[in-house]
Structures are given as structure tokens and as C-alpha cells.
Length: 307
Image 1 (cartoon, rainbow, N blue to C red):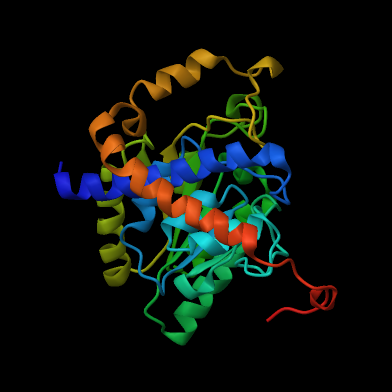
Image 2 (tube, one colour):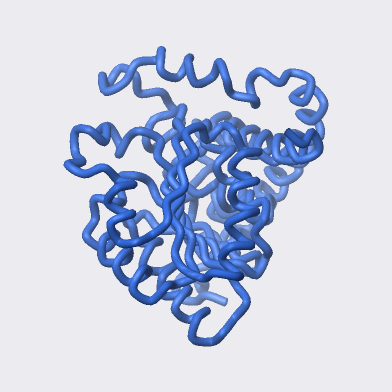
């Protein structure tokens, strides 16, 4: 393992985690103006995937998007201002947590509509192909999105036209409160392979170095051999589906699952790097929160406008 790459990715993942922990701290105050889908536990997936993407490469994400926005290069002050519903937010305070966007760094927006990022990404990939642009398109979705009809339609279209798109399935084991074996009659990777799409499996989303190295190779491959690729990544979310609390009382999972995941989480066990970077990151976060606190709310005249 390259120590420099590990530390670089660790820093980015820790930054996301500390941002999410700050949101948990702030949320009871009602200053955050929208529901939140936290990325706690899934930070390594976003930093591993985004490490080799250029600002001009296009990323389409789900509503559990904090990690992807930050890993792709979204501005932290604009992020907190958006959560606060402020004019200085990345979507002028009109999108909130579930509808972040930063097109200036290729983060093309998120939606609460399950699977909606997939056809959007395919449309972008088709445009890239037809306009002969030197861009890569990535779409991120959960395993629950694979139950939607548009997922199957998109696989067919991507394979048929050999679109330059990488499809990332961020499988955290649950679609809200339901496990895959309770709702899937299919094996996901076998289904995707049946369309002639190449499959890559990453069984541990905490391993951001392995994922980064895989993406490095895929980025090069997509330039020499365009066509869709599918990356399945196993991960685990710490918190409830939506919100900042725990949901073990609901009965669909046990806390022992989380404890087993934490036992091998580098953001928990690498205490030297945690100590090295925590204060620096927390200072940046406090500055971003102060910016959001001081920023004005949109005026009434902004209700029907967007710049």
C-alpha cells in the first residue's frame, strides 16, 4: 500500500466524517432546513471513486450525497449554507441536503427520486459521445435503485450504445429498512453481466486505497476502450435511513453489525492520523458553519428565480 495515497485519502474521508458529525451536533437546533441522509460509514467509497476524476468529469449522485459532493470538490461553505437554507448555498438555499449541486467541479446534482441519477448520467454520456468530449461520466446509486424499471432500461441503453459511463452501486445492505434478500429475486452482478457490461467487485468499501486503484485503472481503460462498466461496492451506513439518530429499535438490524464494521474502519482505528488532522479539519468546518450562520436567507423575490 502506498502510504502517501493512503494518508491523502484518509484525510479526505476523515473530513467528510467530521462534517457529518457536525451536522449531527447542529441538527437538533433546527438551523438545518431540510432532512439529511448522512454518509457516515460510507465516506471511503466517495473518496476512492473521486480521487482520479477530473473537475470536468461528470458525477451524478443520490440524495445520500454529502460525501460525494465533498469528495468531488464541492465548496464546504456553500455546502453548510445550503443546509441552512441560505442565499449563499450551492443551490441558493432552495435545494437543501437532498438536492446538492456543484457543476463547476462536475457534481451534477442529486435527487430524492430513487434511481433518477442513472438516466440523467446516461443522457450526459450520450452527449459526451456525440459531441466527442473528453469527459467521463459516473453515476452513483444504492442497491434499492436496481429494483426500478429505469435501471434495467439504462443498462440496455448503456450497453447497446457503449456509453462512456461508470455505474457505481453503493450497497449499504438496506433499502430503508429492507434487506436485499427480502426484495431481490435476482443476483445483481449476474443481472448486469447479462447485458454484456463488465463487472468489478469491491467487497469492503472501507478500503479506499483499493477502490482508488481500481478507479485509476478504469479511468485509463475508459479512454482507450469506451463503454459502460459496473462497480459494486459493499459498505454500511451507521445511522438511520434519514436523520441523525440510530434505528436499531426498529428491528431490521442489530448493533453488533455496526460494531463489527467499526472494528476495521480506518477512520476509527488509525488514531495517529486522526490526531494529526482532526483539529485542522474542525477549524475549517467551524469557519464554514460561521459563514452559513452569517449568510442571509433568500429574499421573497428569489422564490421564482434561479441564477
